[in-house]
Image 1 (cartoon, helix red, strand yellow):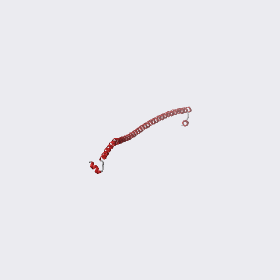
Image 2 (tube, helix red, strand yellow):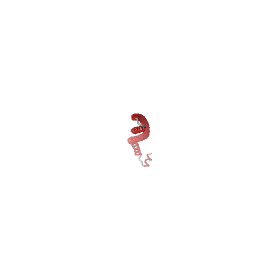
Image 3 (cartoon, one colour):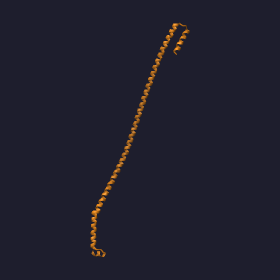
Length: 165
């Protein structure tokens, strides 16, 4: 084999030493350079993978939060509508009660006024009857005292009645 090397123009000892040096260099590089570099690259790859996982988790949480937010807003709107409806119904009920109370009071006032008018009317009629009775007595007394003829009696009655009016 040394002859083959010589024909090719290669020095066998030099070639073997170069091969040994190359293998040693590869082993040293692997141990001291490639190993740490590969380790750093692996760690960096792991970090990137973790970051991607965290980003996915955050995105999912954001979606959940967004859907929760939408649901909460929907619930709040529904509750607000319910409160508004209840307030309207309460207001309407109170309004109807107030109207009914006002009607009742108005009817009571009208009824009282009618009763008072009736009482005043009856009182006025009784008073008028009494005055008419008094006047009739006065006329009768005057007629009896004067003992007048028919024409004088009529005149006296007309005068007395005109005083009443």
